[in-house]
Length: 115
Length: 111
Image (cartoon, rainbow over all chains, first blue to last red; front, top):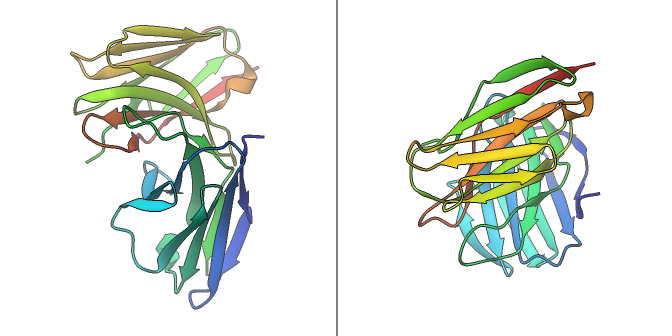
């Protein structure tokens, strides 16, 4: 139990569907992250939220839309995805420290498959 | 461009042997972190070493950092089958507020 819970664990969707990924952290952290992990590629940072405010958008296509209603919850809304978007989507959280990056705590991810 | 890069890409050893993985990076860093990922799971933080530190230990893990060579190594001593996983280094580049991960080293420890 890492303190970061992601649902669903697996998701299969068609290119025209709309779905959402959910992440919840019980660690009292104030920074949350979405990453994309594809085979044979480094982990790609997608979005960062600090104290509910988006502070990083790493040139992510608009078909991915994040939402952070509070410091404990993070969503990733998906619509009209492409086959190349099939990947493991990981959520992470960490304490916010202006001096340096603190260790991040990851959920077990959502395995997304686009048909 | 990719900041951290692990070497080797894959490593296969027997239980009881030591495993060494290396990480090279390109720009100045504040700190370097190592993570482990078991198949089908998220990443788990192992150890953080700051740019002014040269060596750090945690249980069977030993991490070294050479900022002049822009490289780090992770040594797992007396490996166990349960150490089978992918290992990633992540750098916190000076002037940036996010971590950059490498592609990882896949470690297989056979009983």
